[in-house]
Image 1 (tube, rainbow, N blue to C red):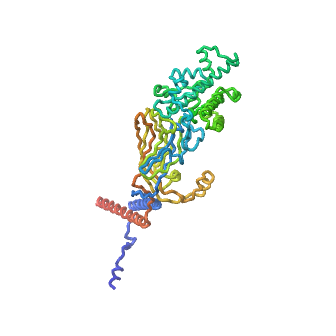
Image 2: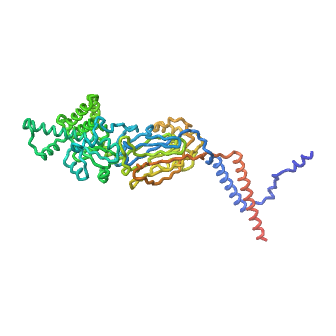
Length: 547
């Protein structure tokens, strides 16, 4: 057949007799170089084949989750937990004072959390004024002003010469302050009434019934001595520096002083009876249980209760007093070991579920029963942690997820540890976050038996089923700037977020087996050919020189 002679003549590996081959020292050296080169390249190629590379892809975000989780742990350095609230705003709606999944922890002036406070519940509704008082403040002032107006010098004098002082720091434009004014004046009248009755009783006990022979000055001094507590007020519009020295952040602020030392703010119901009970509890705490039967404030409490009963027979005084006694017992149990002035800050921790739409959440000072002083609101803060997505994503990434590039964990929480301090009033930091959905292949975590044993002993998270590695995380591109506010606007720490429509995906890329074998053959053949060409060139040059 015609094909046989052709096939018989086809021989790409013809042999040359050994007698015709000539060995040289140069050939031995180059052959050694060729073998070493082949072995080195073969080892590197095999290593590359057995390993994988990270592939990055960009595509439109196909995430269909209606909401995304925001994890946060933020310390407000100069904002009390009583006022700190979180609002969430997006193009789909607004949520004010979010309380679900949010916890507050008061911190002291050193940033140390002393104890667990409570879940971030709605601010307590308190009675803002005494509804049983029908007179206006002008009508109450017709027989004199009993709640004395104070300036810095008078306040210092009052705190020096009075054992107990109860001061109302207010602003004349504050609606809550105007509502409280008749109640506060009535409380002062009750205290003067009790003081006058004690003076009369002391005179009768000493001289019998009849008119006293005190001069007006002596009588006023005697009444001042018998006052259960000095009731005063400070207008923070006229005396702004004084209110700043007293750290007044909201109006009205009712401060109680004992021997010139502040003992905390009153946060209960603003009725005469409740205020009188508070005064009695403070006096009892100061003097001790042994003086329980000889408290001036007890007379004031009884007088205030009698006044309410005469003002309205419809009120169940006994029931009211029982409720007040329960509040009083609670105050005695606390014993004011927890001092608000020692805990000016608040740590807010938890998570929010926000819509997958552009929006923001902000931390600001709010109160249902106060008007905030904008110039005294300081929203300096420390971002201990801020991230998007489930906590397990952060956990697995921190454990060394291999499907992500270096620095990926840091890109999911770039704010962590940042401190933002405002140096002037009417300022606040605003933060802008571009949130990028990041997908990566779920790969079962290979854990050795030794590691499993260690995890079972030291980490409860070992109970997570192997292969439950999450496949989605969120990278954040952030920027921050200092914003200025108008004088009548309360500053807020604002976090504006926007989810990118483009998603990033990371996946492992492996080489095909045929690609590996092709490379191996290329290494062997290429190295042999190149070294052979090099040897031929050297041989040709050296032969010409001999001639």
